[in-house]
Length: 369
Image 1 (cartoon, rainbow, N blue to C red):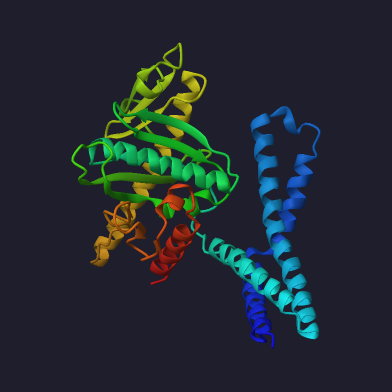
Image 2 (tube, rainbow, N blue to C red; image 1 turned 60 degrees about the horizontal axis):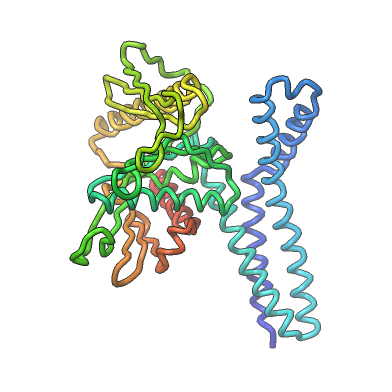
């Protein structure tokens, strides 16, 4: 006898999907597509290549948003037909196929549901991610490089373009720091839950005693800001250093001193850029990132002051937000959400969606409390 609960599960999934569609506002998405299509069709669009790129990129993303919704609608309709056929014919093979498709749809709808939780002020923006090695010597710099590869693989899995803006290589293994940009809608809202201190515990490949080594790396995520006009930085508050871009081992990759390092003297914030073609472009990119960091720092200070006046001060992120265990029991555990993955290799290869989704839901619960 076929599992009649299957129809009830599909009905429940369809109900969840209707709620998601209401939040997404499909009609608004269609209106955006119509407006952007009209702009993209203007004959003078490419007179300003930068503006044209933004229009075509926004159009592509909104079309993808609509396609995700319409694809799920079609798959749910097809699933209803498949189940009806299986029940009429008492066909276990069709029922098995229906259960498999239901499981796949539940995963897709779950991802769409998580996206509806991204309602913060900056959540729709792209993301600039900076990774810095912490305590742990060569293990820490190697760990920082492992994290960078992890996020780049995650972006590759989602077909998100990545722009590496700066990389500072360590004298031994790995990197001291790296900054890269993923400028797609909601990259900031999605990746901002990755911000914090990450801890790696493993048998060190750099020591001869086969001892367990604990190392740390910090991940910072800030939104892409087209114009950070809210922050005015006096020239006297900035120290500008120009240097030659370099790759692993200190080998020069540029023939001119085009890399730029900006230091904000009052706060000590430092931003380096070396991957643009000219010193002017590197300075402009570094200034945008510095302005964004100062804007967010100002808002964090205001929020902390409000909490202090209210009598409670609670850090947004713990000193260690996630641990990666590569010895004994292989495990990745998020210390905020309790979410665990028993296959660290898959996580370091970019399989982060489960950890990220759990983080987004955790943050939403905290915000609602």
